[in-house]
Image (tube, rainbow, N blue to C red; front, side, top):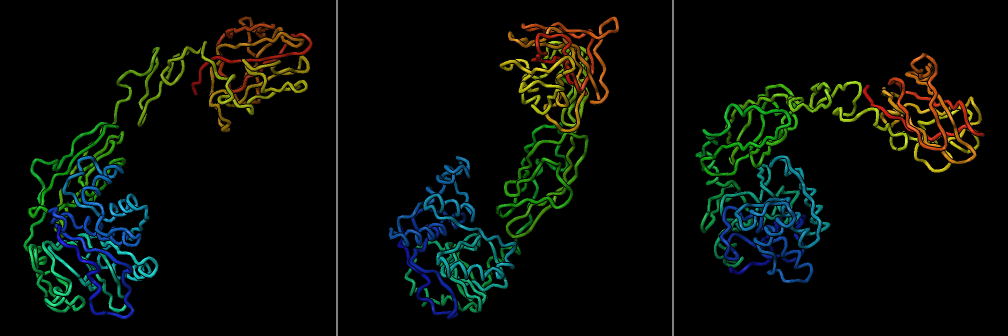
Length: 519
């Protein structure tokens, strides 16, 4: 392992008396400093190690015993931020991964400062200055460059500008003091580096970066980088990729398509939709180039342009078309017992024959409880009565309830089920039910009914009796036992009233209805 230099900025001549610098010691980690060849992808890890050395120094721990690149990768896999294949790879990390790694290893929270472009970095110098005043710790700078901002590099190596550590800021000079992890090779002493011409803040001179991957800078501009950009070629879309036509997708079908474009210089590509729109529910991962989601359940054609952009800002556009076809939800014949399937957007409805009900016509209406016994379906507020006796409330009139049930005062009393016979909610808008049968649970006591009639209503105002085949009111037998009866014929209702006609001492009822909801 190469020797690590400490506080590499300390011997620089002051640029600005008002400049604010890092407080405390740190070690300078850079490409290959521990024998791992990470040139071209490890700058984020090295900046993270430099920051970790500062944290451990503040805690009185060894600054050399920081987590390795492998440990950082294993931690990101353990936190499920990365797939298992990430461990041992040459994949780089950015500011977000740095934040969660510091929290993982040290339980120190971090803040991300989003800068929309390199030119806007100068606007955030007061934020950086405030950070050094309050905390004094090293800051990581992700990929950015600002021609308006002078940046003093302490050490450097290749031309990548993906990650660096900020150890100082000058508002007056609009300058950052930066520790660059991109140097590779054996380091001389800090003094030797200064004597060789790296005077730190004098940015108007030409500097030659020695060693593998070295370059030439003039006025803080990387000359080799500019030449590289000028000579670079735009990305190329692969011939075998999903060019032009993505395909036809049935509604609710899962979409997972990899965009395939290559950069001749092998830099990482970024993808953007620059015109048109992807279907609702479908998105583009800008970093990976995957188009994923669920196809909308509509007949439509979508056209859009996707741009592949390399790290030099050069790009290539491709126009795509995607067709979606509405899914036939009735194709599997989901409606039972002769029900008619009606396809709707995203689902289906069943129009059932008279004897059946339920979402798929799966219920026999004559034996399907409407849920009077369940308060979640028929809340207490949906039960009312007239001339109720004493404390024997209407809500006690549910089939299966304990005690007497509902008790009325005389033959003029009645028990009513209102509104949510269908929905179980008092929404103010009631659905229609076809009632097929009724059931009463008697009670062996001094109060019980021996007969009752029914009346039904659609609007809650006009009630009609349930008649027998002769046209007179149909009387249902009751006693101290349990009795279930079919109606002479099914009736449509939103409101149902039970009218005791004969009883012992007082009319008493505990009831249930059977039928199907259909409107």
